[in-house]
Image 1 (cartoon, one colour):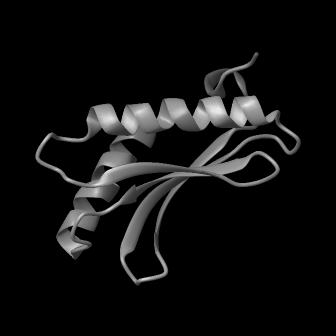
Image 2 (tube, helix red, strand yellow):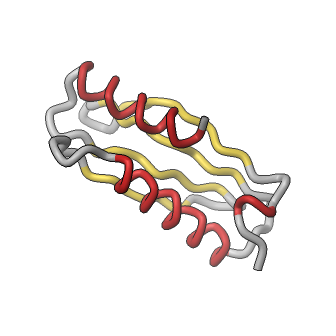
Length: 100
């Protein structure tokens, strides 16, 4: 099974959106080739979520979450503890560092 690194059509995009309560959600959205097998999408998201957890300092209280979408899409996002701009900025910095 090809991995994210072996899939030239795989892309990751970092952005920040708001949840239904207006709290910022830093996220990495993945896009695999349309029709990518759900296991490849799932494995890619879980690996990325593990990388985010490993890169998160112990002092941070946010929670990393996974959302599988459709047609090779999914995202890993941070459910922030207090939702302040400072916390969101720290989360975005970690995601940018991981993706490059």
